[in-house]
Image 1: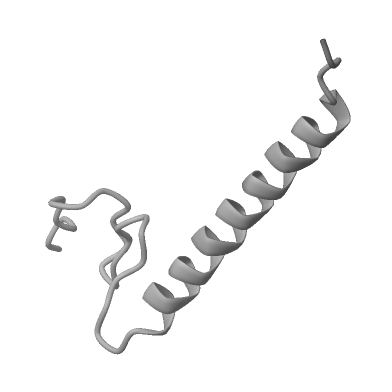
Image 2: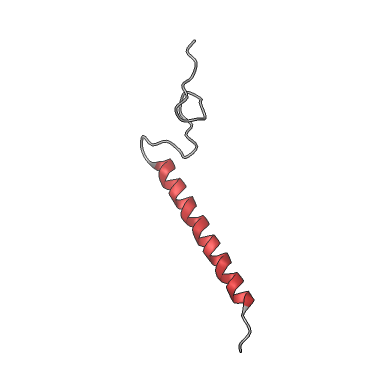
Length: 58
């Protein structure tokens, strides 16, 4: 019986992680560059960080 090649398996996992990370980065950049869109954190121009919250009116 052949022995498992752990180095190959580890390299494949690392490549998969790298690819997923790059895809996420591209998605973030696409969302950031959309006209009229908001970023993933939900921050808006009124200074609130949570979606659905409103800024106190003076």
